[in-house]
Image (cartoon, rainbow, N blue to C red; front, side):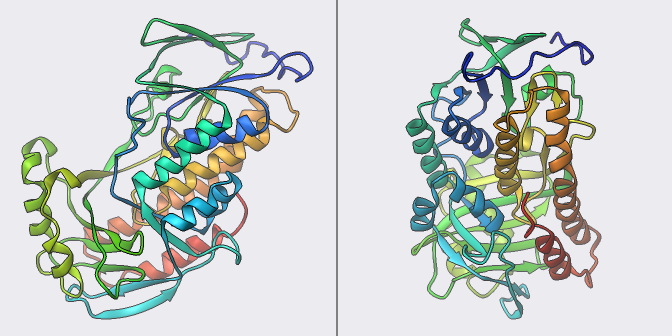
Length: 391
């Protein structure tokens, strides 16, 4: 990709002269969110997503804490999210046999007028965001990738996988952990595994499950569940990484039931419903934090393309949504779209993201190291308190 960091950059076009054009690569949480916000500000936005189904069936459940809910409210989808999920305000820590050791009040990181935490089915959240993107008037192309980016002083020329081309004032890389955009602009950082992997499944919600409960230790490193609606939850078991190629996908349900053996409380009832391997997801924990800047010229990264954390703090989607909010604020502030603006975006975000990434990795590392007196609730509390501040 051609780019000269020292070359002069064209100022942001004045709305009276021309409407700024933006390409968003990737239709996950961050890509959808930034598209909705930029369209609301009157910018012309094209969104391209590699998956023909827009990832509408991917995933089991998601835990959204207050700072994520705050951004979803800003997107105008809070009513739909609230009606689709299950809100709660406490976190339970249990022994492997299900005995409750501690119940902590969740910190309302989104403010007192939002729940501390809400669980919901991930596909349902994606459907809500898709509907909002469609309603925004953005141009959406599915099954399309950006194959080449060429920058000059006037903007970015893009060649797409179907042979078509486009010209944009700005390209936003929201294409996730394995971001091709990140590589295309010469950022060589890559996600690194933490040594842990997670089994996830959506299942019926047993009577009495009304919050997230986590068991540290036992047959696996961590076992937990989160209610996602009146009748559903998602359950997860964290173990040591294994070679994914060595695990037959047809055995996923059997493997997750095996991993859940030895956990009591609600787990036997949950495990009875882990029968369909197609509904079980197996993923390694990875972490990434791009240092220095998240842009090259007029191409900028957001979300997992710039940073990701293992889900031990349930902050991955929240950090991605916050990126979209902060970047949109800067792009619509009247400032020039230049290196200074994009560096401001990085500086606004990096300390907060680093805190989350490091805390998320530390919680997992304690389990890997067998540190039985680790202050997991304390680290969670300290980190969440920091997130009460606006991004």
